[in-house]
Length: 353
Length: 250
Image (cartoon, rainbow over all chains, first blue to last red; front, side, top):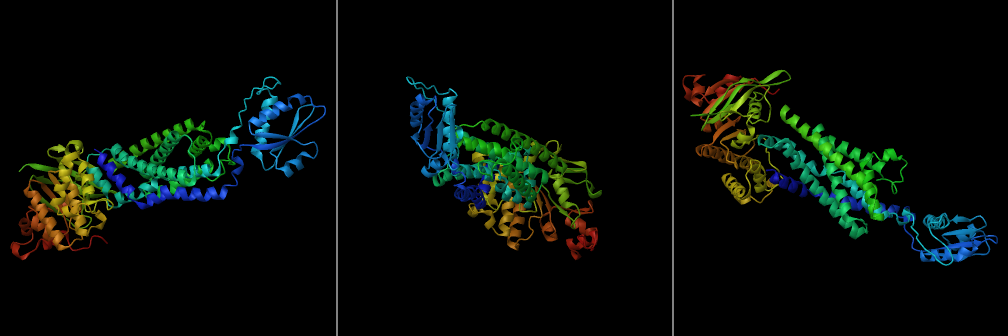
């Protein structure tokens, strides 16, 4: 019975050019600006393929016999060891643009890292640590290599980060898409016509929720595809990312319709919704460089946007994320609770009037 | 004639003031029943209670012999409501508006398409079916507003001031169509501020003031309440005589 109502509500929202601007163009424009502005800030997180490292072996070093094996392991993993007999480690790193410098001595080794090459330093540190802690077996006859590089070596760049989080952010502002429809329903008293018919509160609610979710999801879906082709944003696991975006839009829509049902004012709904999305975004990394927020984990975990951002960004950079499950649970709970409240409030309003 | 709609002690209060006060009206099948009253008389609240848009504080509405509120699922398909507001979507085409509101009554598929064509033809908008409603003139919007309420073939049509703000041609067209609907079997409740309209189409008229019916009958019966020679008085003069000349919306 509500199939035609859903279809026509969808048409009303889909034909509104403001919605195309808001959900397709805005995320791309904002992403493009921020990608450009913060590309150097996030550059340190770019993965490195190969780099050079200086080293020196002290006379009394008991690892001297393993140096060639270490160099071999490094070579296979893109790290070239170059021996320097003289010069201070710092000046050598600076003068030759080395990714780091290692002094092998009697007790072990001393690692000097470059201030500008954090990833190279961390990678070198990880490899040496793995060798000296026994993760990599080293002996002269049988070299077994099992280097697992730290996760941040494959971390996100500014293109992927801002390309993803601003699609999430604008998806959170879903209610704008329905502003025209809801205002028209109220102004022209179309809702009264719906009440005269035999529609239940659940049917009226669904006839608003479903088309709104579809239009917003299509909008940010188009923005995602365009951002992938135009800006080069990588989405990693596309199916899982799409599911998360759909759930994000569903939760935002359900929550914001609930605000509208309670406040009975589109202006109040937009102000409250945008305010909350901004706060959740602020906590959740929408205005940060890779969520390096000053907030504690317990505060960040309060934001559903943080879970979605983190899950999508990690899916993009690593292909997996521990935040996928928490994001799905968070969004599903928001959707169910908001929907129940909306239906109850809708029923009370319907009976009261 | 059988009673199609009956209000029993219908009462609605806002801020402890009775807007509709123990209202008892009975409408027979096949009638065109006119409801007149000054602003604030309680006409729209009465219509809203009859249509289940507003819940009465007391009393009930019997529609086709059953309590309407308790049997809404069964009875709502026999009611067509044409609100005073243009309750249509400007960003939908004419046929899409009719489709939306007709489908609410469970009509679908080919039958729905037929009903859309029929309703648009009925209000003279067949040629403009693919135009957006926002591009329509006031009169065309009024006609589309009617088409949206008749597609499901209701037995009772409620018109709440359907001719406000339109040109004489459109008004005449709408009035002719109301009479035609009535001839085809629909019972009509009609509210308006235009006395000549009510006099022209209604078989029975009730005048409402302060939430109560103060007089009812045919046009001639109402006139006889004021003067013996009914040719010397208009319905408007009767209305002013019964409700007073004092402004109501100060």
